[in-house]
Length: 580
Image (cartoon, rainbow, N blue to C red; front, side, top):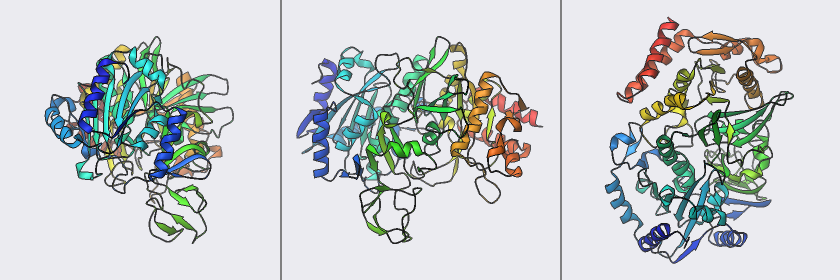
């Protein structure tokens, strides 16, 4: 099958279990892709849209986002999963999954997809195999991971025990019979009952974050829910920044930022996941993915012209609306004339402005290869990665958190990440707009005990020859009327510029117990339409609000049990004292 005995034996076992009508090793050759797309159109899995190789996929109406309560860590010990994960006994999980997968591919084609995460030929590279009955998954994996005969060559040269093995079945799409199970010790992923995003594309959150975070812990590196950008200053100096934001909080917009300041330029290496390893002089990072899986609503010529341009070719759209001339549409794009006919995300005939709710699903997506992006960094495929100069943490915070602040040291930087909170979005099922703690934006993705994860972050200070600076950012501050007071989008470069100047030591700060704040003059507000009151909120701290925030952080740490590192708890208490 693949020429690797132990892997071929596992594939034969899955064939016997699932009983497919056909088996295809999918390496995404042009001939395979042409046949796959033709088959998908014939069976209604995708529809052609106007433009060059643009396609529409509609998921089941109950299968539109992550379902965290149906996502499990099947470690041998429940304590290894920790207080923030759903644990399932691995033997019970295996028995349940065996029953679900028995004959589950009957009458269907089994796709065996060898894939690689991270640029080939370096210390970051990891290999995986996903077996699926979904042509949508096969097509998407070809866009989101490295798939091809060179991957099979790599499998032959790697230790089989290091290969992540995933098996996915669309199943009956019953939300309460949905299972996304991770087995850290055996490096396996089993997913049943979904055909959407990270529930089904097992190289994404399942491999690149949940399992990779465990592998990273065991081997002294980090697997993180982070974008990576390359910043070029007016003098030509290049700096690299990694940033952790929860899903649908602007990672793609920042990654593809077009600067409003002359001489400052941003190039993207990744918009969602970063693997970070100690290097000879610091922390180095790669984007393990090969494509973008971006949130469509809100993406526009104003917010992200680069992403919008990227979707004009070789893109799969999921759960967007479609105009009568075959173009995708979603909330945030230019409005159509009231009464214009349009198909909504479920394929229902609607008219624009009919008051019948969103036309595109709030978590509708576009899937495009990295190479579609006009602002892709030349270093995107460097197997050695890029040296990270700064790490940012940020979520949707309407109050308290200023526009940008710098941690005094690594411990406080880890505290920024460990205590990060954000209003929930449509990327996961459940209520939207609820403030929840989301440490390092990894709450749904850390594959082991979150308290041990905090400790692993703190320990990096003893491993790394030099440490990146750490910052908090917040683009979502609101006034008393609930209106966003920071314009965002291109003006975010003002905060990035200050971060860059702090990396190089070019500007002074206003020091506070919670972090270093910019001097107003260093943010150059002259070309930004914000009020004096807004500037004050963006560049200062309110001691009473921060006292409440620190108490909330203390309560959050208590909710995690007794294993939160003392260093973090002690720092919270010290800041409380310093604030008075």
